[in-house]
Length: 166
Image: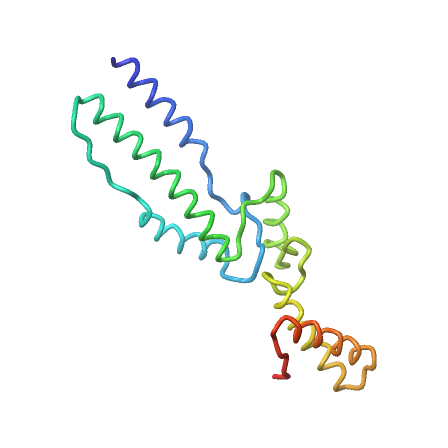
């Protein structure tokens, strides 16, 4: 009986011991707080996804239920952290890409999130920023910028957004 308990405990420690959450595992995909701030905010709230349990029966059954509940809670917390950090503008990096994002952050230049050099999220955000930049250049007399502004304005209006200068 004790051997099975120790094996289950050893497997749990091995699985949970592999979890890491440092900045090298993440890359910036949008604008938002620094990794440290985003991680701290998510870390404070991740306990809210934990579920309790009630088990009645033999000591082995109660221990198994507790272990199962602990594993379920760890999985739920990990999923919460993943989603919370995505909302904050950070995503788990593909294998081998996190170090490049960390290096770029250390040099002061933010990494280009998935090829989007400007606003993250939908194309509308980027189109609005591009329209605004083109509008400013058009006001200064740039004919090419006026054509770009007209083209982007038509695309945005078709999507239900009416761009106006700020």
